[in-house]
Amino acid sequence: MANTTFTGAVRSESTFKTVSKNSSTGAITEIATLGDGPVSLSDGDVTLTNATHSGRILFVPDGGQDNTYTLPAPIAGSVFRFVYAGGAADATDALIITPGNSNFYIGGVTLLDTDGDSISSVFSNGSSNSSIQLNVPAGFDVTIVGLNTTNYQIFGNVTSTTAPAFADQ
Image (tube, rainbow, N blue to C red; front, side, top):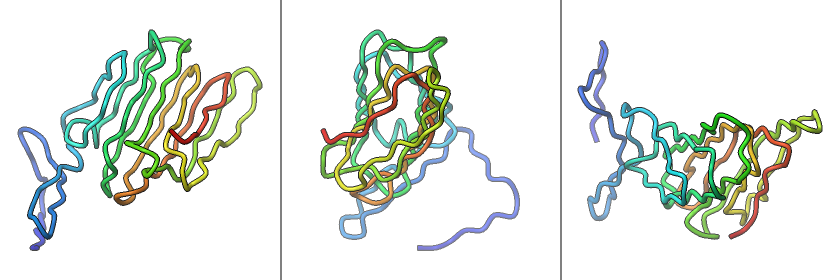
């Protein structure tokens, strides 16, 4: 593989895509798309893809019901940033899950407790938790990064009266 060095700005009239090439088959997998702007997720369950969602800010709406956002299989370098976009505290939950229990979270989030006036940390167990439930959020900014083909790193903050919860699916 060759390296290219640029001495000036690199410009694109569309987007930049980060890809991974399988050394055995030559198959190309998109990891992230840069330059398309944020994505407003729908009020309903959404299955995410690397090509459409990785590398972009994902605006999560004030839900009419609990919504589940399913990540694709982890790829090293994929990045999903979830930001609450509601105009008031949500009365429902947002769940962000991996494709299954064999893909799990490492890390945790900081809870900014609005009724207990406290700050605390909530951590995954690092070995099987594949779901995080953001309970009745007033706000959140959570980033999930693919570490390899098994694990996702998770970090960020959640503002709520109720602590987020990690669990197995």
